[in-house]
Amino acid sequence: MSFYNIINGERRSSSNVHQCTDPRTEEPLWDAPLATQEDLDEAVAAARAAQPEWAKTTVAHRQSLLKKLGERLEEHRQELVDCLMRETGKSALIAGIDVTNSIGQCDYYAKNALKDEITFEDDTLTIVATHQPLGVVAAICPWNFPIILSNIKVVSALVTGNAIILKPSPLAPYAVLKSIEFTHDLFPPGILQVLNGGAELGVSITSHPGVDKISFTGSSATGRRVHESCAKSGKKVTLEMSGNDPGIVCEDVDIKQVASLIATGSLFNGGQMCVCTKRIYVHESIYDEFLKELVDVVEAGFVINKDPTAPTVFGPLSNRMQFEIASAMLEDCKSKGFNIVSGGDIPNDGGYWITPTIISKPDEQSMIVQKEQFGPLVPVMSWSDEDDVIARANASDSGLGAAVYSSDPVRAQRLARRIESGTVFINMAEIPHVGGYFSGRKSSGYGGEMGMQGLLSYCHTQSLQIRKSAT
Ligand code: NAD
Image (tube, rainbow, N blue to C red; front, top):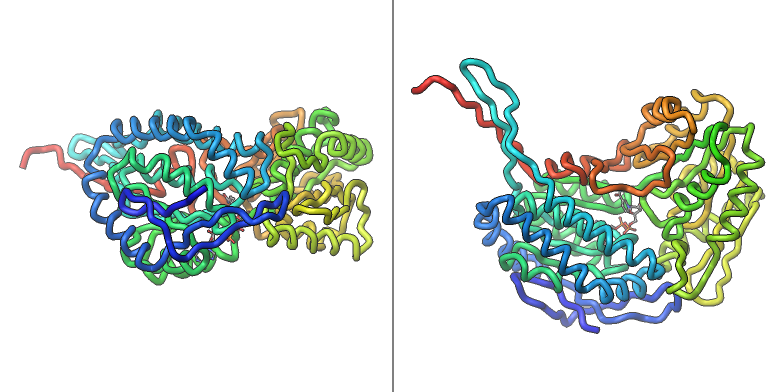
């Protein structure tokens, strides 16, 4: 298969290429083109030339194109799923979810867009808030859900009248490159472009004088560098970064049902989701029973299955870097003598696999509780006092997502509202929905995306202050 950067409406090869590795087989994949500084300059110039006319089109026109964008993704579903499976190790089921939810994003913004709003009115004055595009947006994306996490930036930027240049992760560029190859011609040349590359290209993008805004999704460490670079060049920036989401389980829950939801919330995509539940707090009065049920659920439904077509939401670590990070965390748990009640194996017989691992009551200051594991390692602690568990849930510099489970809806909301995170999922596994504003607090983010509020981060809100009497 051949892959191209897309610049000014054209497919571009590069003499400079790299290959990713299939995490199930460790076989090298296809050549992916690496963009040069000249490619970036050309893409930025094309975006700047095309964006003013694009901004003059109506919202309704842009929404009709988003609908077509979703239809194109559907037409090419199988090619996209195939790329995703090979580059990330996702099962066909999860790769399909990546495509389906991206189409859902197109459909959502094809139906929902920002409108002008009267923010003040009296006998003499009307104030109207109107939302203008920022110009050229560049999106810097991670590898864990390649299409969903890039497409949300594409649809948000396009519906608000911006041009967008995407940079996928060099660890999983194939499906994103193909998704833009399949769809860019719906838009004027220069409006939807993609450039593959690594940190060096990322730095060039964040410091480029022709880029007005960066939308970044990735780790907090990189996000801070992006923030610094944007500050220097005076760019707007949105940062979606790492999480270490707590899940609180109250004593009044249906244990069987909630153990299953927690297993899904923690081990979905092998734990490689920004809002996977990464540390579980279970009320001590049900701790033993809950832990046993969780182990049963995990050992029955979240096992290593090397057949990628098996209907499972579990899979390997997506690349060697993440495999090594998660392996080191597991080794740390073992060396400290923590109580591993399920899993704990690294088969090392081909592919980046770690058995789903449940660790009972590790030291709360340890790496597995304090750091984002981004892998199939689930620490389970106990609690007995609401104030105490909230303090422990909030004792983190991350604040992305959280989950609360209780059969008492008033209690669940009371707890949720005290958690310092951008989104709290109540009585459900942490699966974000495009209709909800998604943002991280503390070191998990700066600004946010999705929902109607997310569109504001792609706009400048201009106030029209209109005197009523004739001049
Ligand atoms: P990463 O920070 O290593 O890379 C993200 C992107 O930044 C890549 O495209 C990379 O090439 C680029 N990059 C690297 N250095 C750069 C620099 N100096 N300047 C500009 N760009 C640079 O993250 P990752 O490993 O790809 O993704 C995993 C992380 O992303 C996890 O921490 C996860 O929690 C987080 N994540 C967050 C969300 C969210 O919505 N908050 C969603 C998914 C993943």
